[in-house]
Length: 337
Image (tube, rainbow, N blue to C red; front, side, top):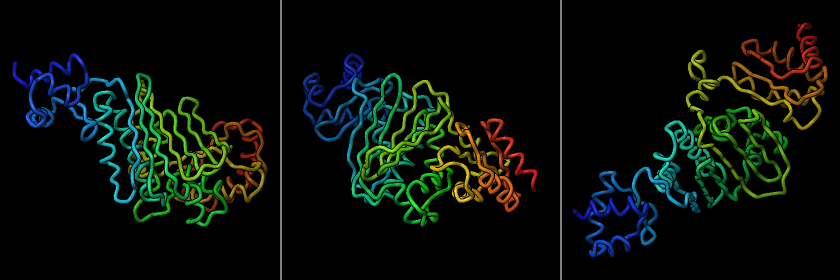
């Protein structure tokens, strides 16, 4: 049996092997082994993970016993696509995930790591990815300025909660010349679970519950992004995009959805309504979701459904999950036009 065939047969039986094991098996030097391995890797027959003496080899399509990737990176000069390519090889994502799933993970991971590179003002970040039979999860943690503090400072917002509200609408960016501000919005919609934690604010999206939650954990420096995609997910990234960037709007991000319950005060005052409406003029269609909202003040409703609507007739305002009392208030102020 040829040397290359022996390597392939060994990997079929043992799933992984390092250089020492293969040298012992074949009774050849490390230099000679590298010639055969290089040929197999270039042909795509064998995959390599790790670096230098910690390298190991495996066949495409084989799930490794340990499905973890952990590494700390210096952010200066870091290329997020190269990091993803590295972890995708180590975890064999092309074979382990469906094409739709892998495209979602690729998009979300590179967008979130790029955010850390360009916006965090941190020196380093820690990346952790895990893959098992049920799900893929990644976390990106930096010790920089913090996502909500950065937005509040650079966009002159009143506090970090206001920047959180702005962020979930989409199109919020502190670098408009280089970023569209869409990455977090679309990543949160494509994931089964997605969360951002920075300082004393954590926001979590849950696809199964079709809901968003805000909590106040203990203070944590920097930003932690957590992403989870189930292995049985049927979500398609192009459908997520088409929902909010449809053909009718020339495939541009012109639709958004805002959960009213995320506002930190009662939904009564005009000032709180103005906080909600900030930057919504960037969109052509806005859905206001009143899930879990039990009351609505006339001033708040009037500012949204009469004043803002009259100033922005080009914007379609839709509502969802309104209880009868809230719908009656919306109808009342709308009829005052």
